[in-house]
Image (cartoon, rainbow, N blue to C red; front, side, top):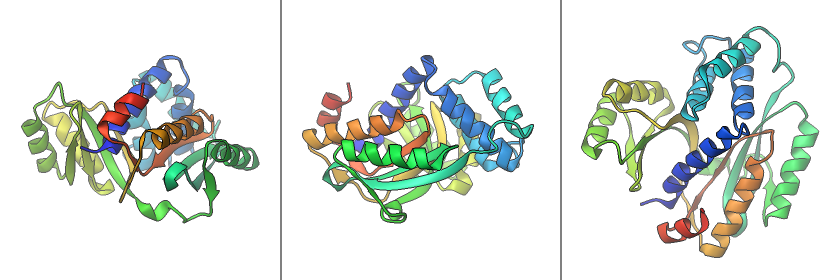
Length: 249
């Protein structure tokens, strides 16, 4: 059982709570708009847009909001001045952290990210310093309390999934990026609804944290995610089940 996998499920549930307060939808909308601006408004031919839309759906973003965000981007409106930036750094206990940013002010974002790392027992690193410790994968989260494990495994395998991680409350179906859409559609065709589906970064190796470092690391992750410019935060920590339950409340 992977503490990192379980954290991805907890993070998704926290994201849904944030979305209810409207804090997440603006980030999701920005990502959709910029993807449509850069690659066109048809998700069938724009994989980045498709991923942004699927992520928004996973957080129950209303269809009207999604459509408006696509239209803004495809209509050459909002999004023209945003750029993608990736920051890399280290958290407590040497945890590798990758931060994906979508910003209209590179200098502001750089200063904010650097200060956040410094305030939370971390440090910003040079590009390439930690990115090699991750690989891009498709990640599909399925509620383990609603679906039988054998059914999920069979449908995922038939559709071309690489692996399934069962953490007790959910299944995480992992795919190669090129197989992501096929696996997501294969699960749906089998009657298996996903709680979230997105292309993400999965750590190749993990750092096991004790309770003190776990609390420090999660505070860093939370602080980074509160930044309006931050789209995603990835980290290679692994928190044992009993510690994660204690610190994730």
